Image (cartoon, rainbow, N blue to C red):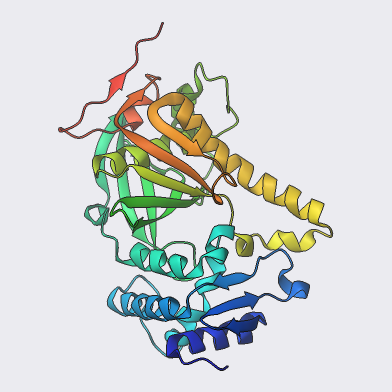
Length: 332
């Protein structure tokens, strides 16, 4: 590969050998084109500044070396080539068109310490008979983000894990922290017994009086509300929700036409995005400013300096600090 940039050379060689991509270099720019036979649903990766990419890749590898997040320790299996070769697995459509920016942001994801105080399970509030706890967990490399946000409901009988949130935090050009949410997923399966049923029933009042987006699981509404309120306490006011990550949706391979592919994409992302629409209906100050394809492929959200909960049943999950007041809007 003819390129004077060491990290870029290694990255190109790994992408070509692993995914069969072809590379077109012109001046200080490049296009990485996926093989249509294997990844016909993936857009090409566009690099607008190879010099900038080389610096970004070097800073990314340095962050990996300095931050041992589960499988980050470099050894015979996890070396520089490995960590460069997995960079393209979690690209949104926007990231594919702005690859240097994606690498820079992912480096921020690795180094961010916003929720480091939640390394262990931490009590942040109560909902009825249940304590509400949160924890920041480390994730394996190669997945969407290096950290997970986990929330729990606990009483003297059971500790129940809510859906987890895959997120990353980066700093934009204005010096503002931005949270990028990739997924909200239920991962743990519980034995279906009376204690579990009691916990599940405790979420149902969150749907009381709700007309729009009732098909969104109330436990997901609860965990996202907790996450948003803790971000708010940290002074973070900007959130981006990723519409979808093409490489993650391997079932695209079952589609035989672009129409079938688009339908699969819609079904895979619609429920995720509806969760944010649901929250915008239940919390004043949670503002959706643009939807995917308005300005890019993300759902953009801003938080006001004051969050006002419209539902008394959701209010316990809007955890607050001593420096901030959370109000419940009087029902008319």
